[in-house]
Length: 385
Ligand code: PHE
Image (tube, rainbow, N blue to C red; front, side, top):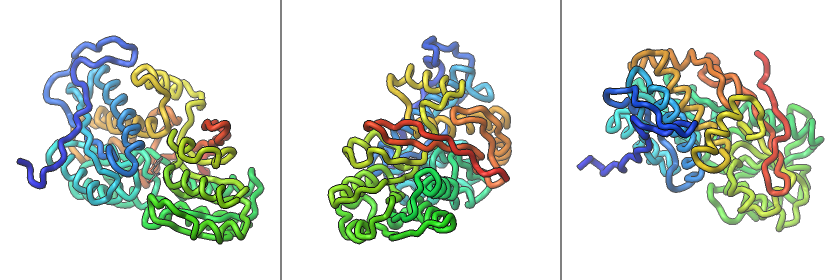
């Protein structure tokens, strides 16, 4: 028995005979033992919706690669471990992925607080890690084996503030965010700094427990200050609860949010409360580049539904690992790290490359919630260096 009864890995790869995107069965051109790519994701618990999406995207990338001959003449196998939305569980999952599953690189985690727990483990073992969606800047600062395919919070926080001041003409804003969540705290702070610097006034800066039910104690004083907008730096479930309760308490202004809002559950949970609200996101199905359209088609063919943004982020993180593997020509950690750092690819969200700090240089989308649907509103490019 494995010590500590480690959770069984969820084996998600199809190996030699995979159905490729075109629906045909690919020839088994690869042989030898599979190369294991690890995935650390919230498959249960807080954020399980995110984990399911990211896994779909990663699986699609690995299956496409296997249909095209795998890498280094070997098939690829994606093995996922459940971080349960918890940093301690996440650390265990990272260790198990490397030490038990034999992962040569890890795609994950989704949430910054879990990537922050996993990054030192990958760095110490010389195993490259590529987070699909963790936006907190400290994640990649852990070391040279740590990458991400998502933009970082200073970018989205600043963009949200610029958008609120410029496009929405807001002058006063309140910030609400989950305490103890590196992501929520970080992006709220960036928003506050950028909004103030741009000439706006922050009327309130209030935090709550993650997964709380009652926000009245912070919302009542916020609503008394009648801010032009409330910036909710939270994942979709808390964001929906905050918005719904603010409306019940009589708030009439706008809400503005961040990438963690992206889930079909958001509108279902919030009802009408978020109608007309905006949030920053990594991608939108209406983004019309050929690679974006190809990805969306392949995804729909495979899963019978539209991809969401975490699907695309998961797909991109796995693509970067696979391309790194192919150009490194070996599974050795240092060579793989260097090859990943040098990746240049056209991905669904656009032309992709890493900067010197292993963060991508990429654009973001502003989404509006209209008639209960997420509609593309604008694309914002990163600042030129
Ligand atoms: N950006 C979030 C984090 O760093 C994760 C996330 C991204 C969750 C997008 C949902 C959607 O924790």
